Length: 449
Image (tube, rainbow, N blue to C red):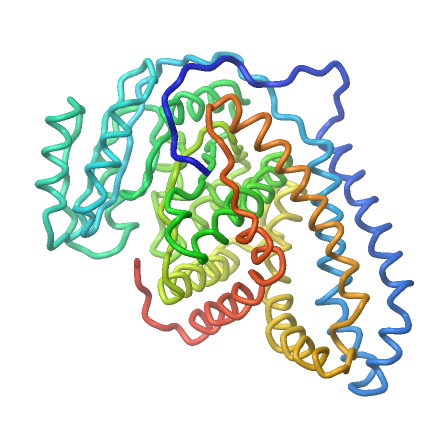
């Protein structure tokens, strides 16, 4: 997707007289998903019988459930939910509340100047206080930030936190926040010129029990190589579809640290960011546990730099998987007070099972299929593909028409990246996630980067 430009635009939100309550959408989507799963179970009976002659019926059921039944159910639920999703209209698109940006930085001298320059170009009418927390940098991060402060006339303070760890840096910054809202921003993330305005507008238009709003993250370095081209589609379709699903049910599971807005008093009530490798995941789940809701604003767009090497990608995504396990340990799904968040967080309980089945059953089954043995991977496994394409098609139309067009952004032509994303991305993701689960199980040393 092309980098942000700075042209004015008008309101983009849709009005509709027909309205379904969230609870109705939730159960309707479940009904569609259950129907789809029942059909897939019926059609897959020959597959189950054939595989059971090789590995026994219980094991065959576990394998096929992890490859077909459950993924099909989840995709059907996603598709039904996306079809019924309508973003609430903003009450005021031009708020002017004072806000604070917290930026934790470690050796970011080559990126921090550009990040701060985009903050200086915001069309937000309210005062913006920037707090940069230098987390033990050994390069010229601070000097570069000071130059940007002067060049862009930013209201910025620089703090120093020697203890390594992003959560230490953010908690130090929290002590100095004096505004009712704060935004966390990664030091390599660029904001669209209206990003802050839409983020604040969303929380100002939300009920009082909404404590945070997750922004929309897209890829800024997609042209680097094929790996970044694939990740462009993951952020544009995969992650965005999950965010929209969770936002519809008022329980966005990760108000990501890269770019999200929080009510300052809510963060202080849960004692700030936790000591966790996935500090934003655990923080979000603790907010949900307090009966607060988390929204998602697709128009609040920021651009992040994704890993351009397999090693960096492997470390990042295994860290995310490990962070999910940390969240499950600290806040159990059944401890969530709302039915939507109970369900959404419970899905994470079965993710290790799905990733393990995919890694140790589906991938070997794919190899066997090339030699004519369709015991695990065969025609029935393609039954999930139409739903996947349908969900991505719905989101592509939504993103193009209701997000990119009003923000004066254009979707890049990246057909090869899309094909590889659809056909092969999970082959990388599941083994990577499994490694993250192993890291947490054996308590490997945690790393911020």
